[in-house]
Image (cartoon, rainbow, N blue to C red; front, side):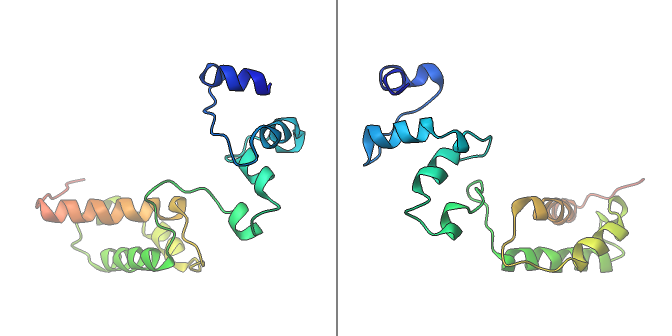
Length: 139
């Protein structure tokens, strides 16, 4: 397997970047059945597990430039609460107030994952756009 990757890495959709451990590191990674999971960075995680703290090696992969700051999520929650309180908010007819209450009632975690914020970002962004361009909705 190593020879195939070495000679034709892109033929098997693998971009080879030789680590400081080189061939032995790659062979170990490819031979370890426990790391052949459908999880991102599984080979990297398995082969560096003994070198890094678990907090680092097992952290969730997040797309750039997504923040994980709870302060950002709190700002989104504040903006969403303000939209819900404003009866004249242009996006208000499109929102489910019960769902907003559920979202705002969830405890704020120490990390703010993107999938938790997407709906809030959409509602706040759409409301901003509708206000900025003076668009009114008739439903």
